[in-house]
Image: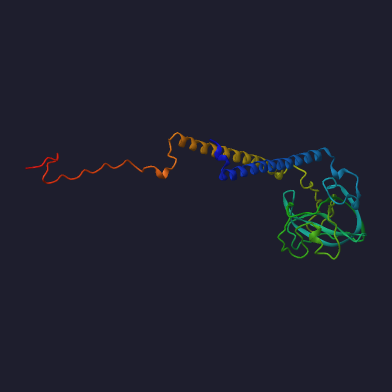
Length: 287
């Protein structure tokens, strides 16, 4: 009864099922692994002491920035150069902007330093000048921002002296020197200008280290892939059962094997020949 599974049409269906189910299981397992990695990273981050409480180290010893070095106090010495404002940044549910200065070090590279945050609009704002001469700063190390970072303006079109993203790829096009692929935020507040005292910007947790929305998206995708695998298997069994039932009905004569050859309706009765005028209805000659 199931010899139809060896027909060319069913070979194609069977091949699709054999390939689709392992693929769905693989993708579901991969998404589950991503979720478990995020959970493990979150648990490890909670067990670790606050990075800002660790001893400060020279900047070059903490690069490149990763989940371990992010938030660690980094020490750098140099002189402040160009200054930029980073608009559209919230702090304590208030809208404002960052004050960003480039610290040129002896290595020739510049380290972006967020000196603080001020409320209001960055356009036309008056901010305190950076300290002059050689300074040594100690700030919490952060990785360069990207288009997925909170508060980033990746559309461009900002006025001169403003940047939408704290990133080496963005700043290197605005200054005539190399830029470190990292930045630091000062933990101590600096005196402000007309807008009041600048507030320190707290360091953000490294990307992918917490149970954020992306972690639960991975868990949701896991369920979807496993549901797809079950759906493919269910549909295959349903098609097989329907085909087997159709063949059984044909063998039992419940359905004609060739529906086109079946009569469309009851046969019409034969018409009787009309009676002859010289004979009665019974066919007897009339005299």
